[in-house]
Length: 199
Image (cartoon, rainbow, N blue to C red):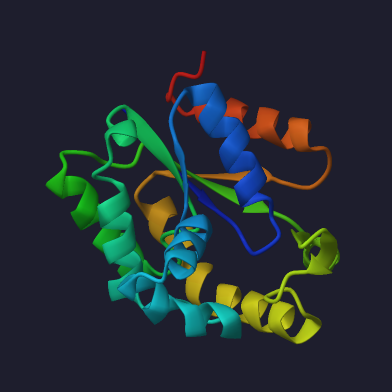
């Protein structure tokens, strides 16, 4: 079973790389951002709880995030493994994740941290668009003020996870700048070099 985690700041390419790497490993990518948005769109109680935090660029409370993730990991497509993108974001969430996985007899195989310079991150986030009613619009959570706030939150809350996972011997850092396919190759190479067995 392969249980992989992608870490990285907003705009590092976790969503894109999560899809590509998961496809290569034949496991489902699980994006907490997508999970949040699905719950918000469906108007579930968990989605309503998360909505205000997402729109402000703040972290969704651990209890809500963990409940969504725990529910997702009960689905049949995760039986052979999965790739997590966007969770955990704090050490407390990482400890909660260990508990969720242990309940199912699983443990993380590898943690990949995507690294991108701050200037490139801002440029990527400012350029992101969504299509609504045929119009290409900037995402509501990608305004300049919200971008700055999200990067500040990441530095404060999520960067300590690097040291935490590093102390467990699970962390690999990968340069996520440049061509998408090159980044994917770097991730798979790092994964393979650490004994995870990518074919």
